[in-house]
Image 1: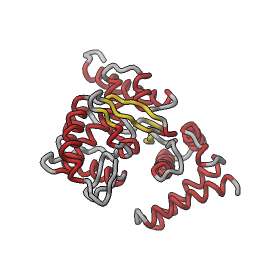
Image 2 (image 1 turned 120 degrees about the vertical axis):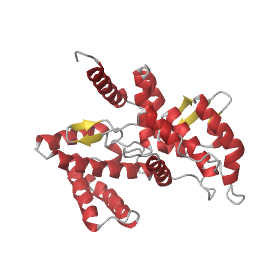
Image 3 (image 1 turned 90 degrees about the horizontal axis):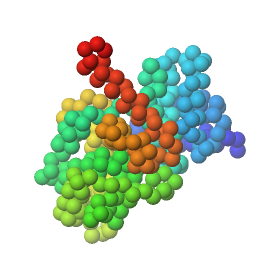
Image 4 (image 1 turned 45 degrees about the horizontal axis):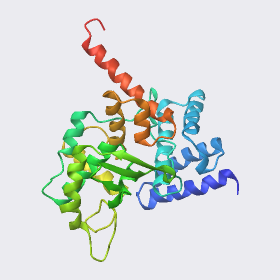
Length: 298
């Protein structure tokens, strides 16, 4: 089987998901298919060997071939959706499109929340309801640690050490790392484990999964995405919210407040510091915007 045919099979799996699970129209499915197959022909690699640099080079090729910025953005959107699905389904360990976004001006950082928006989002869940308290705890833990949503949802109860205030995350390639927990996250985790989580556990469904649904099963990516979007709408946050937005906000806010790049790299679990360096571009842009707004001779 050729490399192109190998990737073609995986593209077809994704396209079937778009039709059966997502209910997208045939025209939308065909558009995704054309964009993904164009990348497949150019790349000539097996799925597991495709890297972030491959995606960046591909975007540069599109630019050199005078594709319209909107067309390039659509092609990148197709790649992001494809690799996100392949990562979630376990076909690959690393999403090569992580922290790559497209605008008409080129490749830039994904949107992040301001500190005020984080506060508003966290205040949205109803803490008097078990589901609301669970949601607040998940938001606190994700923002406190900057972990990937897949890492958050795969946490076991024994991954958390509240006495020493850290959590063990299992990242890409099954790499283990210890991440400190802030006092807000510790506070909510203590209450969640003691009072709230037992309400979700079913006698016939024993599980060591930390975050559970009302059915007593582990939280899914899709459900967590719905939860975040719902709370964002509730508190009138205009940005498009995804589970990863808290990870991006964590990194940006850490750098804004003086954290060094190597520390943020270690906390995020990036194997390549060039991935972490993307966040410095946003931080620099924010400093420049503040300077231009504040300095009388800017």
